[in-house]
Length: 266
Image (cartoon, rainbow, N blue to C red; front, side):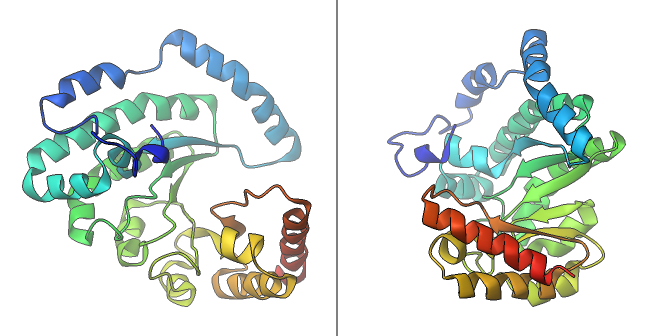
């Protein structure tokens, strides 16, 4: 269950409705022993967060990402168009598997539950398909989080712009992943006009092209543009999705990003 599968599978697990019976035996809820192991592993993080007044986040819920692993995205889109009842049943099975895992985080007391929606944007799905298939599941999850006193975060780094009205309607608290470089169609100024004061945004600077490969001057300019466009209020600066290169030279660039944030955050 990883993106490694998507371009390499010779045959995906789910090809037809008959495959759902077997999938149900794989997507099982956590046992009491599983939950206890998790609570023990998570406890130091919660103590650290409470001691330093940090945000305690947990996740992930999956939907479109799981479709990439189980079906392949091209086949999943064709299923939605040509076999809508089967597709809805598959998504419902995944959602039912998500729910007790999400509840475990909420019972533990996370401040923010995060769903990974990387493959739920309009790079793959039209707004109409999003409303038909993903919207009802997200509405249930957002309600579950809010009833537990937690916020709901949605990771969508590309193809979010035509969905903003639906995300606002759902009551999602934070859109994680605005990316002005690799996000398809991402327009930070238009995003700010649509979301400022209504939904938090988290991101604003590309992690790979701008931070890992960019110059100190390019990082400074990108941070300034992100804060001035999306912030300063209701905005969390972060490289999208992350910075992975462990070289010392890249760490220096991360420090440059932090210095630029300190300079422009006011």
